[in-house]
Amino acid sequence: MIKPKTMYTSSGGVNIAYQVFGEGSIDLVYIPGWVSNIDLMWFCPELVNFFEELGKFARVILFDKRGTGLSDRVVEFATLEERMEDITAVMDAAGSEKAILFGHSEGGSVSVLFSATYPDRVIALIAFGIFARRIYSEEYPWAPTDEERQEVYDMISNNWGSGAMNLESLAPSKAQDKAFMEWLASYFRSGASPKAALILTKMNTQVDIIDILGTIKVPTLLLQCRDDIDVKIEEGRFIAERIPDSRFVELEGNDHLFWAGDTKIVLEEIKTFIETETILLKPVYDKKLYTFMIGYFQTVNAYQYTVRNLVKKFANKYKGNLIIDTENTFAITFEGPSKAVNCSAELVEAVKSFNTQISIGIDIKECSIKNYVCDETDHFVSFIKSQSYTNEILLTQTVKNLLVGVDMDFTPSKTIFKTELGASLLLFTVTKRLQSNTNKVIVQKNLQPDFFLHKVIKSINNHLSNDYYGVTMLCREVGVSERQLQRKLKASTNKSPNQLISSIRLNKAKELIKNGQNTIAEIAFQTGFSSPSYFSKCFKKEFAICPSDLIYSDSE
Image (cartoon, rainbow, N blue to C red):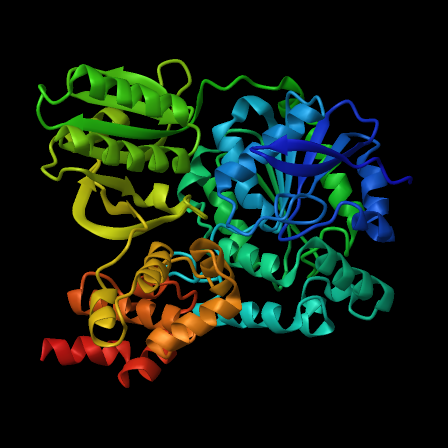
């Protein structure tokens, strides 16, 4: 099969590489897992054979997600909404109005969210070896622990693209096939740099789509090998139980890559699924997933003409739809939670200059496409109006779980939202990452309070919970070379840039631990540590006491 032409389309200023092939009458968009390279795919005979057969009954659209393969490399996390926008951009460029989504592994998360948010553009959902979470919890005990994820981070940092990555676990049936394993290592290396791979892996760790599984209404086929090492079969069963009317097929074998094992049975299952009457009927859906931003001004007089225009201005800026606009209450719907959160943060800052007090709540629900409102939304509006907090943003845990890559801080709230059915939902407050007061002690006792130093500390605090923030980003923000930064900080603080970053983070963590409102694991993530165990090690080295011991000593 001849490799198709590689083309590009723009998505939010990022160039996304894509290819189109096949003679089928139905479109299928392949959403790759982890990292990919659509050119290197055509150097693997097994994958080429799979594509050749797939192209006989579908028009196939391949693409490299932002930050990987032939698409633009980016240094920040991509939000799930940005990744959905990439899919939309590729479909539009390929002239595809509706398509089947075929998500593999990590690609399943965005496939699920896209299917719930844009059911009018999805004919059906097919997934192979996908997961709902990537970190252990009591509700989802099959995912890796913090320690196991840290081992993956270390492996990427030290052995990216080599045999030491234990690539055999992804395709055990090909473990003795030297040519295949060499191609696989090359495929990953060409798909992402070590830093990009690490960023993507950390993003995967934060993914949690459990709460939206029940909103999937498009026909769904889930495929997975029963002895898959990377994603446990229990995870597939868990997902299948929660997606209404989904079909789950357990395949013999232990390969995580769908083109490494018995591809014939995989292709047969996909073809049979596509040819069913359910797919051919192409149902029209009257509901979809919406993110709701509810705003309430504490006094009617405060909701003046200028403030009302601000609400409309920010709604338009973030492509929201103003559906409720009364004297002191408004509601805006968005097709993704990050837009709602960023819109809320800007609005809160803007209305402060008018001495206006506002309460904002954000939730995500499946509601009618025609009127956007459901009973549960009305209940949430009433809840927000009853709150006494001002100039704060509250959001539900479901929303928080979908905010992967958003540059915000999330703190568990003492406020609990009780639904009409009596269920209690945990809420979080959300704030922009602003300068903390933590560094005041450091500045006064250890550092000379010069202008440059304050600029450095401000930059560090603005990225306090960003675990991939480092010397390169710091240099860029303060406008000096790495050598100049080293020299200036050594003279004023006797610390290296990395030591200063770590010190400020750990002092902030110490302050949060003493406040006693969050768990140690939550504090670790809030202060830029991707692993609670690594955080504890650094904390003990800095203060000669374990975080847990600090809690105990303060309680005595």
